[in-house]
Image 1 (cartoon, rainbow, N blue to C red):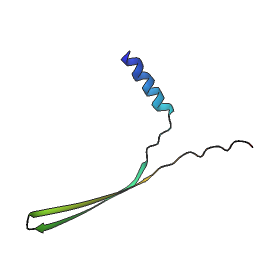
Image 2 (cartoon, rainbow, N blue to C red; image 1 turned 30 degrees about the vertical axis):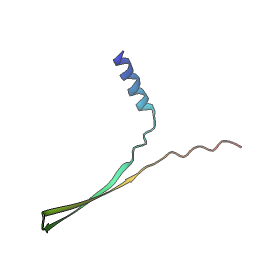
Image 3 (cartoon, helix red, strand yellow; image 1 turned 90 degrees about the vertical axis):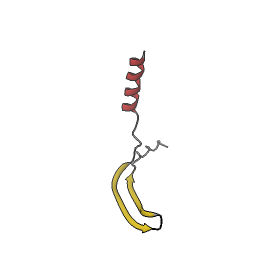
Image 4 (cartoon, helix red, strand yellow; image 1 turned 180 degrees about the vertical axis):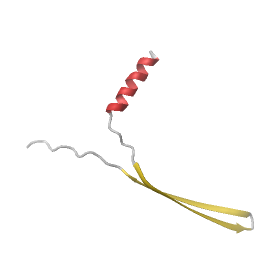
Length: 61
């Protein structure tokens, strides 16, 4: 039965529209400072993504 459930799950994933965003760019900034406690590293990562949603078709009026 597990194989049947896995098969149905794979089919449903293939038919369902994908809502995952697409990564356009990734920027990482790193800054290292010496403090009284030791070396501190600050890292900032910016991820730009796009998400395309299909437009719904208007119903005839």
